Image (cartoon, rainbow, N blue to C red):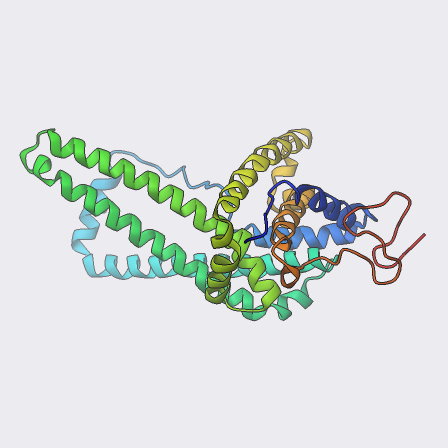
Length: 317
């Protein structure tokens, strides 16, 4: 019989850990350091694009097509170099983000603001996560192309006859179903990696593939419905966090929207969500313990934040 796992119980200790780490006591230097770690870890999780201002005059494309026809080999070379540069840039961002994720978890678990130590200590795990994440991204692309090709193949008779019949309708229906399943699967994979795989890599010092297997067998399979509820809870909490982030951005006249500034300003949100996932996993047994509940010296309740204490660990008042 499996132990009952709750998605509600971890909320209070996660909040208490966030308060303990960031406000008991408040250290601006620690905020800046953990904020930098959070900034690195979030490099692949958001951002917009400002590349929307290219001229699109009517004479641009004919001239471009003519140049391509006359310099096709040069065009292929430039296109390949551009593709390689884009992939290299994406890989670099994924690598930086992967290393940053372990720096943030380490700072939270050990209640410290450090950069070089966790950067070096979790080099192997960070590099493994980078390769794994990049592989998952490529798999996303391949699956998307295959599903798109299947949908298009269904519509080929209508494309050839230039009519809209049952084949076109079937292609739209099948394509819509594929797209919905694709989005749901992508969301779950991203959720599973962030909530289960990365903490498993951190605590067991293993590769991403090994962590996926262990997390799937030990954390997900015995409590599938708890994992689903956890995903829904994270989405629900994210709505509240998004509202807070929007308010903070408006209150700071959009200064809080600047990349690193936003990571520092909204650090309590990042720390809370990380603590929440770690506290959830701790329910699975002693081998999954990230935080010590009691101080070794004064028995201070690390999860309870007892009033009048200034411990952790150990500054008993």
